[in-house]
Each structure stands twice: as structure tokens, then as C-alpha cells.
Length: 88
View 1 (cartoon, one colour):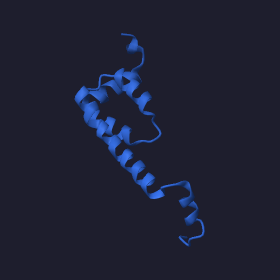
View 2: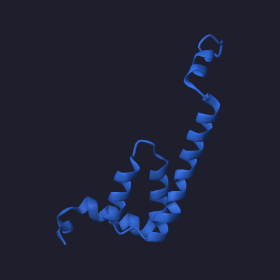
View 3: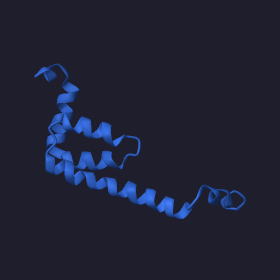
View 4: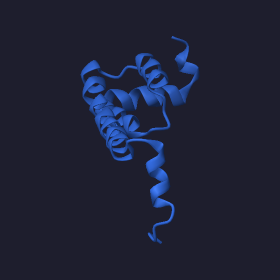
């Protein structure tokens, strides 16, 4: 109702209605945006539920990366092994 005074928010709502899946998927790839904040903001917009749920698949890439790093490091002492290597 009061959003008529905020043209940027209206534009965001329009884009989310038309291209919700793409926006949600791209924002889910960003590690800088906390999930709880993102979920709250998306609930206040007019993004379609199907677009939101399908766009959340973008979280899988972050989770796979975190698991891969965890499996390869095993513990923090393994980070020191690469300190003396000649990778540069």
C-alpha cells in the first residue's frame, strides 16, 4: 500500500515477478548474503513460490564447496603443509 512512494522497491517486485528464478538462483550463489536475511526479504516480495524453491537449488553449489574444503583439509594443521611448497 505504502510502496507507491518507493519506486526502487516497486521495480524490484516487478523484476522478481518476471524473472524470479534467475534472481533467486544468482543471489543464492553469493556467500555474502545471509540465508535468513535473504529469506526474510524474499517473503516480503512478490516472487512466485515455485521460482523461489527452484532458485534455492543454487545453495547446493555452496554446500558442495564447503564439504569439499572440509574433506580436503581434515584438520587445520594440514594448511601448514602448503606453507613451504613452491606453488608460486
